[in-house]
Image (tube, rainbow, N blue to C red):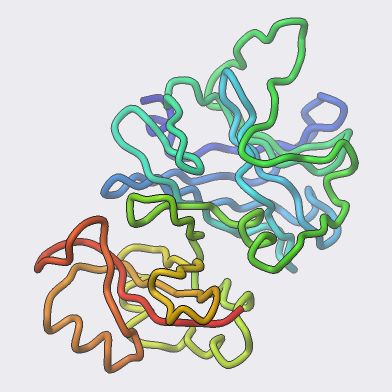
Length: 264
């Protein structure tokens, strides 16, 4: 369980493979089958505002965790993953925690910000393992990538989860990410029921769901994690959340998500 033995992972700036300076840190936290990574990077290490690829390093692969955006103060972001005692799940695939040896943020071809939990495993012919879970073009990582629609872009930028135990894919977001919603729905950042659920579980979900929709096309739903009780459901309805779904039948005491329809 090396991944959790080191609660704070300090990051350094590397240029041409040489360590230059401290770059920030990542804080790991485990709660109820979930791994949370809080990422903070100094702005002077990542340069101008832009987006940079975040990777989880394993002995067999480099796993893309989407892109991080540089803001005025640097990078300040979080990622959430399903986890159990021995494994972490990235986009529905399980990886042994013992195989994870570090985290890397790609700045450009010569520079990266990285931290290592243990010594890097030997790679055959000194080759980097293939990047999994998302394709990365053989160009500068600061180049803007194009997508067919907004949802595809969000899938690339945010952690993917399967909250209902089936093939439906949602992303994990926070209230500060509501800029991705259309203007009328950004005001949900002040919704008391939503904020209560977020502060309890530290994440929300967003995704398309034709099964929940009215059959008129692809519908997007925002979900607040919580436990099903009739009284809680009544409060949820008062704050605009129209339904509840979980992994299996809805029963009193089951964990799931209170949902409401939104637009991107």
